[in-house]
Length: 312
Figure 1 (cartoon, rainbow, N blue to C red):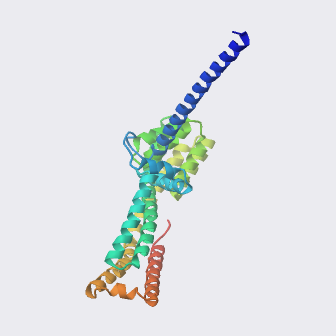
Figure 2: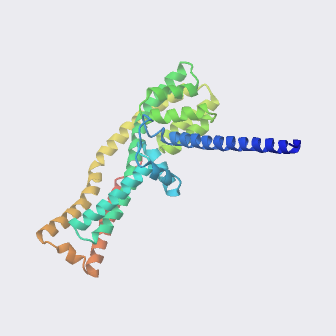
Figure 3: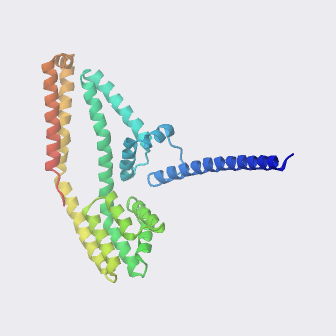
């Protein structure tokens, strides 16, 4: 056989081997990358990373959309062990269930209204969980400041002090500081890591703490005394916030009781006069009156909530 033919066959075989090896390496690398991204996305929301999640197919599709990324960002801020796919399925189930329940208990006209309320309630629940986690983190700030001050006074570097605080404090402070420590370990600067922490958990107290740590780290020598003074200030603000929240508890309860009374009145009227809601919502005038009343109740709810919201 001609040597050029042998050379061609050899080059072809080599090319086929390299192509097969490249395809295999690409497929395995893509699978490993997908597994790594999935682990990193869930590491700060799920304890015990080996547990099996539900609706994984829906979760993968949801994560690729802008809506799914928005949900994922909100879920990360709440600290809930829920994936975007699980939240989406639960939200759709709640919306459909409320639609059917309102249609059966009240009238078919109230079905879409209840579904819209369920959709708003799902995202309101996420905001409530985020605020609840923020409040818990704010309550941990005095202890966080105290731990960092003690570690710094003992001669440890600020990065090491933050890692130590992440191990000693409970969630959410321990979880968030662990994320900061991970960012510092892979090369992020202290300023960037603490700035991202302040963006994830926005609060005046955290901004003050982050500013104190950053300035003390740059200036040097005053971090211990600054943190000691800050600890006292944070303790006083913690007590003040608790007192204000106690004083405004009646206002908060009123904001929820008034709409509940309106819903209860409709249920009682429908029980006393069966089919009353169907007759009322059967005309354009009745539907307009119901919409106006719901709008007024909603406006009153937000106004009362706004009057009872005092920033300290």
